[in-house]
Length: 507
Image (spheres, rainbow, N blue to C red):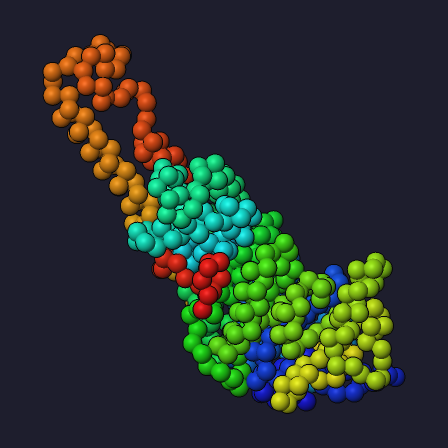
């Protein structure tokens, strides 16, 4: 039926609904990216699950997000339920073997998996601005902040580092405006307020060290299977912008760190973007252009990117054109936009004279899809109406006890649990402010010289006029106290880098 060079997807059907042939994804074209679309409840998650199983068995590591918790079942052996066995017979999956897969659970909040972190430096001003929904003027100040961090050697590792740097920028607004353009304290204050909201939403858990090592999501087991990294995203989806920004950052990191390898006999990693519409909603054109650039170029580094979403219109046309392997589940066509989505989906397939593609999309049953994979020479196959094969692992979520056991036995257990907080921008700027304060106090003491007198509770009734009231704070003192109140973790690997890191910087 299939061999070690392909992944079995299911069986296509003839016009009379009889068996036609096995549909498979050729591993050598696994890095040519893909798309899984369909309305809610049509079987997208199962399609993602069998693709992840197939890549894992082929020795390819997988990274995917678990939006509803259903995908966690891939870590447990499947059960021979009647409807699964029936489907296995319909697609001629013989023998239908059940197995569990090597899974590493991750969670930005550290609750349902190993903590996963990035540094502010790695995230870069473009993605941070996207995450915080900044205005154009505020985004400009964010770019200035990263430029200053670069020039002055300030590591931006966690939220308190960025807060300290922004407080420093507010103090130096006049000086920096002369060098970089208008820097206003109200704009800086607006960014600080947005950072506070971000912190309260849990983003402080994400920014800091130890940062995720790319090698830990590219592991293979001793028996040669690829590890499946599953990101717990049910809570994360309460902040969809953070979810989308994290996945964009991770794809950017893969692009930055992995070497060029050209076309291999199988990918080095496959990356699934579930709820892909969140990546592009309200995204600025420059960000969409960068994503298109990364998707186009990352395949030469052996990485396959698969977008999973309800509607093909969710994906920008430039990105959609890069997706060679496609699984289209049923779409509903009640509104004009839904009808347009059906036509768009149909037009992206190589036509099959046996049926009308647009009509078939609205008639597909659950667990059935239109499938078109790349054939020899990378040419898209003629679209086929296909019954999707049943998964080998458990269909549905695992229990909390099962999850805890897998996390405890994970190959990365204990490596990310303890937050590291080394010297970075916060500590450096705090030290400079303290030194400036001490120098000011010493100068005032020298100027007073003991030849003046004061009345307790009043300042400088007679004398040089250089002393300040004991009840007032300097700007530096206020900045220090404000920043100290902030809570965060720390540390990073680089100052500024990444193809998605800056508006002004490319590759």
